[in-house]
Length: 238
Image (cartoon, rainbow, N blue to C red; front, side, top):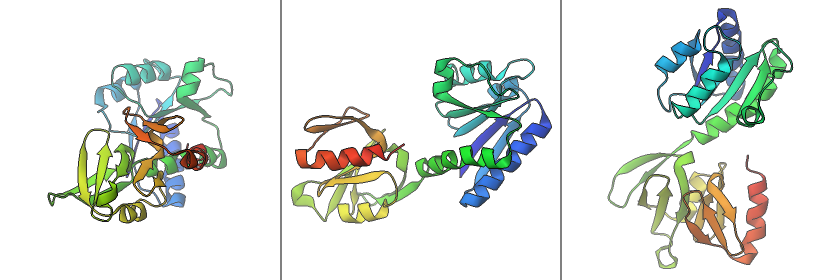
């Protein structure tokens, strides 16, 4: 389930954007929940951390405008997701930083234009929110968001018995072989570096001469023969 927010001071614009989003989701076989607000003040008052993966904001709203609302969402509410600004103007003036962090879409855009921009975004959000279930060596069943997984790895003498699961906030050991885990996460952003390591390409920070640095600063050894194939895979990740 992908959670979105639309904020615009014109109800008919909200309904049009909502209709377009639901149509895109239907074409992609995705489920959406959409919360709507008529002002930046109402959105900020109601916003809860991690309550939305995408926010669509009108730039020119009465009271607190979209740019100011976005700034407060990021600086005060800790929002780190994508923001799409709606505008009546083809060339809305934004700073380079604002353009880097956000997208701009004209309110008058036809559905085809809207869908062309939103489809890859929703597909990526769906992929990030994919969940996987495992059983730990202690017998506990856990469900983990794909985007929180850094890597799976096993030691040579443990192959076929257990796999160590490293996440952004914790670590554990699960009952599975690395082959079984690779099959379970197939089609996502995980890559089998070698017989002992399966990494989430989304969390690769640096590719060194003989190591791989993950976003939590974990270093994994990398053989020279593995580097080229890994580079090719990284180029394919958004």
